[in-house]
Length: 151
Image (cartoon, rainbow, N blue to C red; front, side, top):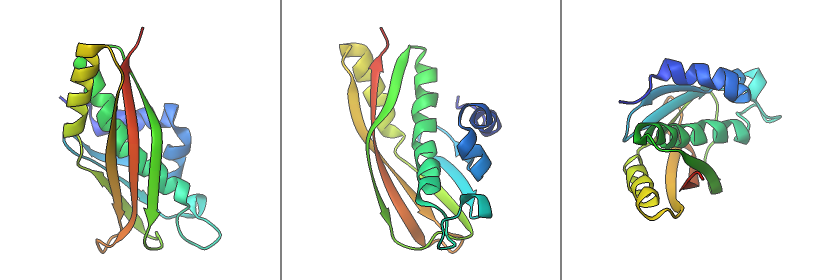
């Protein structure tokens, strides 16, 4: 069972304070999909009166990482996780409330199982996309996650 979003948001307050203060909040988490929102405000804006790209990146990474972290917890094994690479594309000015979604949870279980079986680290790419209140795509992020057994 996935950890509750309220517990995860409390975790961000203590362990990812910059994301919390910028307004990044996890709204949905299960093994297949995660959703987070962040609203453009003074504290997270750039000089062009839109959301700073790094704030979008925090929300985009959070939805991928929350699923990875939760599935590692469910495995009961000590497994490390790390973003090795990422790419981003910005297609529209991010203003208002932006919702980031990742539906790549199915990739995680396979990588965790392979790292447990082989003892070798595994890599996989996850995609997160952000849309504004009108459903218009504002940014797309891809994260290459690595998982490996801790020694």
